[in-house]
Length: 241
Ligand SMILES: O=C(O)c1ccccc1NCC(=O)[C@H](O)[C@H](O)COP(=O)(O)O
Image 1 (cartoon, rainbow, N blue to C red):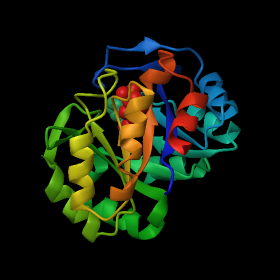
Image 2 (cartoon, rainbow, N blue to C red):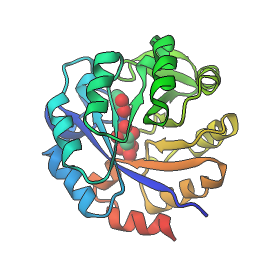
Image 3 (cartoon, rainbow, N blue to C red):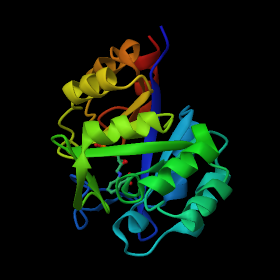
Image 4 (cartoon, rainbow, N blue to C red):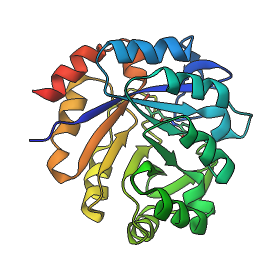
């Protein structure tokens, strides 16, 4: 069976690695240098890094230079997220040498541009489906952006390569992933799905790994690693068994 990929997260706000609760601005807990955090995950055996520019996502500036520095320092694959919404921000993100970018707001507000960049960049573009219930949220998860399944059908028809699916109610809460949502999304698309939000334990990762045959390809892990609920080495061992 194909193993579940793990993507440890480094979310950057005002130059610091942070974790938020429900992705809400103002709920930050700081964990120091993003570069140190990313290097630590790489040393621990990560094959992927999920790197988020929260300021760009919230529209409170950006950490573009730092994101480029961290990405450039990695020997592993990097998924970049946060505030990639137009030609300039996409070009800057892709120029870091990242493996792929994750578009969120743009998929809701600029569907024609997203269809164009999917056609141009193929597998280097993923779309983040960030939901409360089945309603998508954009602009740093602060604004409603339409129905999950209607948007998924549109993006599928445009050739979107994969989706990063986040239940915002779970994100940063250590309450466990929304397995039902992941199953439902996998039933609605044949594209790979990366699960995000809420992982709290090795059992949560094993439960997500059971969804690999349905189409779940990877899992992003943030808070649980920073809170030392388990180590990345333990997580990698748990999903490779
Ligand atoms: O990814 C974004 O663009 C984003 C925008 C606004 C708020 C949060 C955002 N991402 C958060 C993440 O990707 C988290 O790192 C990830 O969901 C991990 O969650 P958890 O394991 O629950 O800490």
